[in-house]
Length: 358
Picture 1 (cartoon, rainbow, N blue to C red):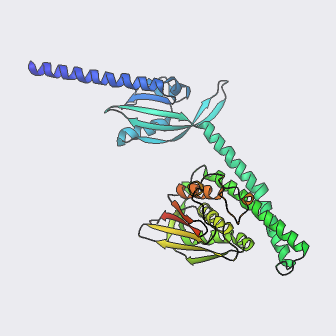
Picture 2 (picture 1 turned 180 degrees about the vertical axis):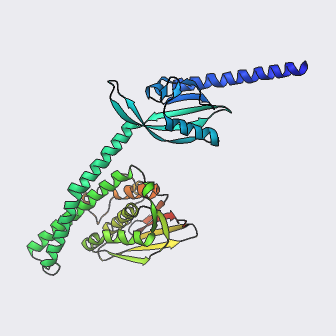
Picture 3 (picture 1 turned 135 degrees about the vertical axis):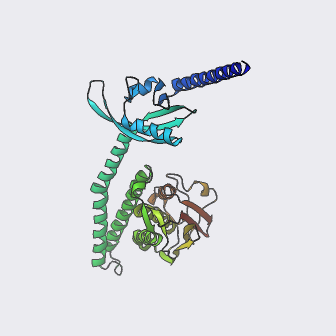
């Protein structure tokens, strides 16, 4: 009899404990801005927020979306929280079909109880699509023509031997070529910055050689090197490989090299060197330019920030290059550091994990 009473009271305590958990979860569900579904391991809904019903994933008090239920089932099977994005079809107030995108997270909260948190990301997806369309349009209708004009000016200056003759016409052509190059670089920086806000396209990532990144970045700065009279010298290049997208990372490195060039004195050099350890590779860009003032150093990776320099007209920079570089590098698991002394030059160190090749 004593044993029966002990079991009875223990079961009562467990029941009271479960009731308290249910009450707590229900209070949380009511306060959440997300859609929330509280359910047991069999997928039976215990309680759901009004937002969850409005999102169109519940019908007759059951989860109606197969992809959502599959994510929940995986949580039950693995005993691990699961998250992902799902696409559903729902109807508007006037009955028209509408595609919607939801961000879903399934969490186990007790031995047999789970909660599903749902966020409508349809508007964010639409904005991302519009942003990408705008980037594509700018690239097609603005960037390509500017690139063509830049190429034509370069050929024209070559045909007129402007490097030798210093006629007024040659000076005008060189100035137009210079302004076009500056416009191209500025536009390219804006495009790359806008792209980088969306994060890395991991599905497009591949195994790429550091040497290819360096060579591409140096090639992109050939005109800037000529314009400012600063030579680029590759001290050591590496065939080691990292994971990323070549165009993205080369663009980030190009911005760092460009920054080194424009803040260097004419007839000086910008040095590029790759160093490897067991787990990472470092790409080092160094110059003997004007350096970075101590008060500017903490801010150089901020958007639109432009430090002061005696040998550079700040109107020729929009202050996005280093902000873009840092964002892209971090997107692909890298890091960037800078060391600088006023009037002695700067050293930028970009590091990435070395890719594991199977």
